[in-house]
Image (cartoon, rainbow, N blue to C red; front, side, top):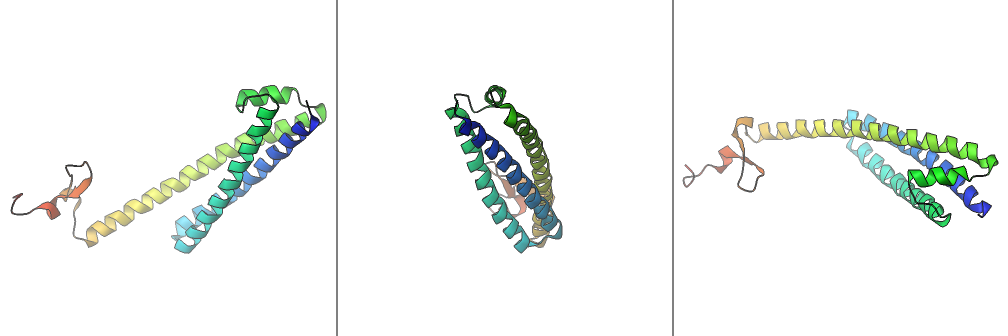
Length: 161
């Protein structure tokens, strides 16, 4: 098998670690702006997150293509088979980067979930404030025929009375 496939995969794996590290930093920034309710900061971190996610997607696609070119499936099992054939000079570094990549993915998922919960809680608070400002009470909210939440008080009419 051509040595350049091993080197290419090793480089892509290391780049993946760097990309996930950048994504983690952006998610931490996102956490800070969510806590501060900084709309402009949130817009910027969302753009940054989108850009880094595109780079991560390309990195994953290239790694999968490298595995496929080497004759292995683009999966965990394919990586394990491929890594067993790595030259000794690259094997240790690639395995260390692979483990780091898996740990970073786990960390990114946890941080993203935390940010999602903060955003969800903020949305609930805003929805409750809007309902109060519009004079709607929680007890007046029912489901309409389409299964969506509706305002029972606002649906009252002579025909429904």
